[in-house]
Image 1 (spheres, rainbow, N blue to C red):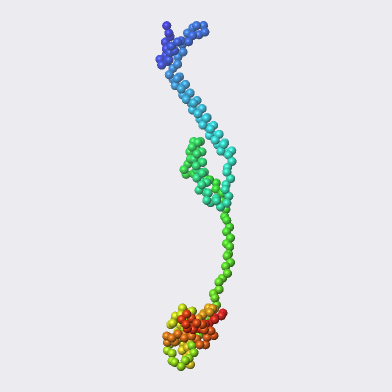
Image 2: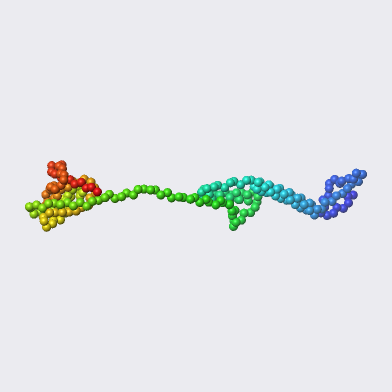
Length: 223
């Protein structure tokens, strides 16, 4: 007959036998199974944690051994600052995701930026010759006295677009008429207008025919 089995124990179907042929009875209780399961689970967690730690240390050693890229030089530093910050943030996020390291939002990764280089700008003065105003000359025109009593006399010519009443002349006590205007150096043709009648200057050094078949007086103004 089999010996009594402890309650809660597992009985083997086939009893183990000793080398001499005598049967050996083994009993495995429920608390023993629970302890063995916990031990196996603990060994599994320790093994997985060791693998993760090894991968993280290998990635960190690779990052430390990598040579950093040389910073750009010149004025482009100021323009490339936003790009450097974005690349640094992306690199930090990728590193945190791969290693499982939490990234604090209050402390963003700082990117080392080179100081911008200031350029010296030298103003070049353009030497432009100053344009001087052309010299002008005061010219006095005289209409000689005549036997007829003129009421009004005007001066007309190239200088006032041949206006018959734009330049009035002043009468003096001896009967002659006179006016002074400012002209630039050049050649001008002119006439007197006496009470609506066009008349050349009889005292002019030169008179030329015009398209109407009458004479125009000529004056040369020199500086």
